[in-house]
Image 1 (cartoon, rainbow, N blue to C red):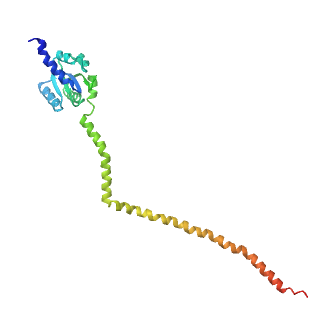
Image 2 (cartoon, rainbow, N blue to C red):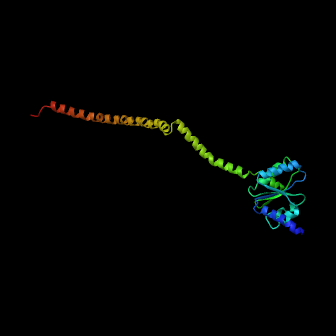
Image 3 (cartoon, one colour):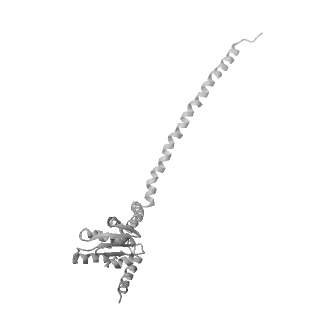
Length: 223
């Protein structure tokens, strides 16, 4: 069987794996112990990430003409590929975290949602929260106002509900007439002097009329 025919199934396998991938990350696994390699595969599998070692020539054929062609320069030395079709940041997050305890693991580069990144870029991607974490934060922000509303309603219920609110408002309603009372009483007090002043001004005129009548009575009638 020709070598081309032997390579074809492998190339097709890689092509099928990256077809719907959200991210693809290449690593150099040289130096990892058997125990470390086993643990790494376990963590990647639990995160829903496909991880496999392929020959560079096979990946070269599979990557050409695709969004992952930018990874060709990294196909030097032993290479393993981590592929995720669900969580774009998962491979970077798991691999970078594992590399902190296994220095032999080297991140070469990767493509996340169609954008190529070098090792430093993949490290930055690894700090992005997972999809579940983002959804959890979003759900928490939505539930917060609802929780506050429920807390207020509970407090009202403990105080007696609407009746408690009406009881608190009653003193305020009674206070209004009390404030208006002084104004109502003040009006007559101010008008009183004007009413009393009128007779005082008319008094001299009445007395003058009386004096004239008396004077006429004392004057003798002309003969």
